Amino acid sequence: MKKLTHYQVHSGITVLFFLFYFLTADEVRAQFVKGADIGWLPQMEASGYKFYDSTGTQKDCLQILKDKGINTVRLRVWVIPSTDKINGHCSKKEVAALALRAKNMGMRILIDFHYSDSWADPGKQNKPAAWASHTFNQLLTDVYNHTYEVLDTLKSIGAEPEWAQVGNEITGGMLWPDGSTMYWNQLAQLLNKGYDAVKAVDSSIQVIIHLDQGNDNGRFRTFFDNATSGLVRYDIIGASYYPYWLGSDYTITIDSLGYNLNDMVSRYGKKVMVVEVGGDYTKDRNTYDMLVAVQKKVRALPNSKGLGVIYWEPEGEKSWSGYQLSCWGSDGKPTLALDAFLYSPLGINTNGREPGIFIYPNPFFGGLLNVDLNGLTGPSVLRIFDEQGRVIKQLTLDNKPKASMDLNLDPGIYMIDVNTGLKDIRGKLLVN
Image (cartoon, rainbow, N blue to C red; front, side):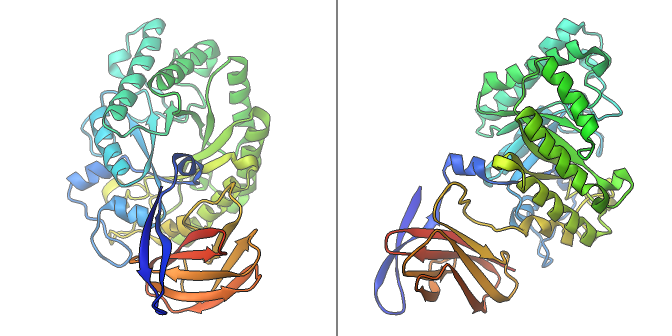
């Protein structure tokens, strides 16, 4: 959907241009996921923690994340959690409230089912207390009902997710011991019950199966070969990648991550997403570089099978959480590392469209701005508008596939429009 607006340019001629561009549902789904897992946020706010943007202005944490390029939130849900500040909360009710809040800000939603009352990961996959004495057949019903109830609640309030993760880092299975990988037949049934519940709520929700150590190809092949043999149903392979916990710099393992993700695409024909990543907050430059490298590996996957990258608890500043791998400083502001989600072109996703427009650097910090036109021929006019729709720069291009210009712009978001008379191509420019 596009909104048309008339505006006066300096020549006195009234021109018609597109001031706002609203992405279609398909275009939103095609956007590269730049995400943040933010399960701690409600507790942090309730405890009085204040968030500040990079200029020191107090703001809603979600707005700060959005301004840093985050377009997706990942929310964990536990069955009957405690009230512990760090290890509790994340109930169905709390998750629903946070999901709706994020949805109202235009963010996409991923729900991470732990099927536990607290953390589930490769070292522990404890059953919820209410399910502890249940038979295996009862567990199948538990998984289905819990999954369905959470997603149906979200759908009923207008906060339906695009993705649902059936289990969290389930390299060794889930709901131990019944759903351990020692009993693959039972694990497959549990996973399929989760899948069926998701699709019963909405068949368009994509189901993710998630393992840790995304650089370990043998680990992933072993699990997903067994999943294939067990006829497990899923849509996406999710991976965690934490060089910090691997005990070496990301440069040692980043190529292994890329190799494994490529192998998942080719071996199983699945889309992939790095659903958890993180780095030491005290080494923000290194974490920035790691995040850029991970995004490049995911973007490079064939046939747009690499969906995106999600940072785990970037806002979980250490003085509050004790967690070393956030992207937040003790001053309440995001560190340089979070800027990595701004490294790539912003604005309208032109995948599958011809012609297109590529603006770089974007974000723009001053100096020379380059505009690369994909598939445009003939004379055209390039205009830059501010957020109020005022023309602030105009340049005529005579059969030129590229343009460069020196700009002196205040920080903000600008619209770049290239008009050939027959085609009108738009993109956004962020100036920091």
